[in-house]
Amino acid sequence: MAATPRKNKTGRRILAAGAGLATVGALFAAMPSSAGAAGDAFDAESGYGNGKGWGRMVDVQLLSFNDLHGNLEPPTGSSGRLTRLKEDGTTELVNNVGGAEYLATHLRQAREGHQYSVTAAAGDMIGASPLLSGLFHDEPTIEALNKLKLDVSSVGNHEFDEGARELARIQNGGCHPTEGCFEEGKRFKGANFPYLAANVTNEKSGKPLLDPYFIWERDGVKIGFIGVTLEGTANIVSAEGIKGLKFGDEVETINKYAKVLERKGVKSIVALLHEGGLPASGAYNYDCDTPGAGAGISGPIVDIAKNVTPQVDALVTGHTHQAYACTIPDPSGKPRTVTSAASFGRLYTDTTLTYDRRTKDIVRTAVASANHVVTRDVDPADDISKLIKRWKDLAAPIANRPVGHIAADIDNPLDAGAYEKPLGNLIADAQLEGMAPADKGGAQLALMNPGGVRAPLTHKASGAEGDGVVTYGEAYTVQPFTNMMTAVDLTGAQLVTTLQQQVSGLNLAAPKVLQVSKNFTYTLDMTKTGADRIVVDSVRLNGEAIDPAKTYRVAMNEFLSGGGDGFAVLKEHKNKLVGASDLDMFTAYLGAHSSAAAPLPVPATDRITVIK
Image 1 (cartoon, rainbow, N blue to C red):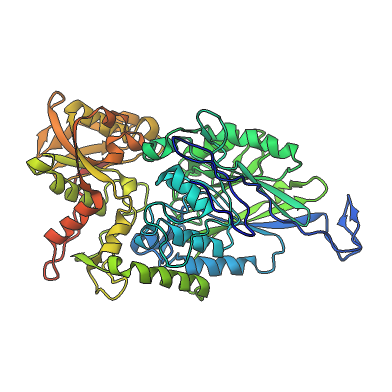
Image 2: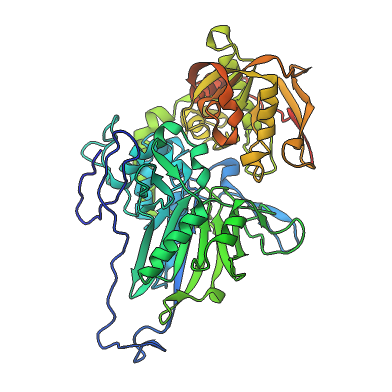
């Protein structure tokens, strides 16, 4: 697929990643710079002189966010909340946050008075999106990000949800290859900002799929951005879409391109990294530099930050959907800022980078970062509101169709310690029911990956449908991937190993606890470590202990049956039968088990006994 040239827009490169994937243009990642004012002579000690030009020290404002996931409309329920830490040490909920039209207003207000301001993102801008964006293959979100004046973003794992071919279209523009243009007479223009993917390379050539870095320049001030996604991306996306691609080590890649930028004379460097950490508190304003046992921040970002070259001045991170503005020492022991702005456009980070014109580097001791809440008490940005309305009108015939009724909010808590979730239980039950008939797979239990549940079901009406009514658009927002369901054979021993892989191996640092159907129970002992956290003799199906030698039919989506999310044992399944999509099963279950007179109650969370 070749990109169509566009006026006034630099072409951007995606290299061949498999059979039939074409090379599309070349990206030169530099923004236009402006010359100094006439008569301003540069002085190495004081900068541009005579009192009217530039001084030696320049404060550059870096605004950043991550994991937007196509949330253009204000997110609802727990997805639209944050936790704030109060001065007395207690916490409170901050409700009604996020939404692209409010994010735009906050960013525009934050830029006021700043001559040097750059906006960057750390991946997952698209993918796993609500229906408003997902129905149109995330074209609405890219349009919104263009209007938000995003300067640069790393790719995240979800940028690969529809494969490298689709990522090429997202970057370069053009109508969808099978669905065509969504608006008559309008051709999708693609992203005005470069997506960076330094550690995503062609297996044969070793060349990056996308440009590895971007140089932002204004009035002689240069800051280089290196963009990488997590090395484990291949384990959490569909293998078909990334054939021929290799995902390299984050540290090695960042250090490699930091040297490249230095050779180009760029000494101020920011890494945009779609990998993150887990602060000890879920409060967005928690001071994760707090010392002591049980404080601070953990997770993959800690080791990464400690090993990324000191040439890098700041790390903007994501993926874990957590909020933090920390300092983690670089390899020389010098503190370095590491930030993340939660998810869904609920926060943005404002970082001040003090640039020394003489050394062309950031004065690290002057770096300051803070996360700011995207409240809805500001005027929404009119251009984004109009964009949302335009796409909502197109989606309305599909999105507004009622598919079920609920008696109250069915939540999907974002708290890392909320291992069993009401909505996860509901989805697992729906999947078991859909795959249980003998001619549909004969499943005896169901397993659902927690990351596949993207939003809560909210009782309050989002439009004119009425409180308690679940629309197709709301169901789609919960399960936007449209994974096909499967029923497979696993032995009891493999089932136990599956549970153990939730909390060991690739999931040791950040457990991925599967959501299970109502007939499957076990105990999770978080006082222990690794695989020992699963109390093996507690694992039961319909009240009976699991027999390691017996074969069980298990329902799960194709992402899991392919070993996704670090569940390598699930690839050892046998006798796979493919059924309908997870979304179809979810909406069918809602329709069959609820009505206006008898709405679906909130499922109990009594399947996983947790010892803390």
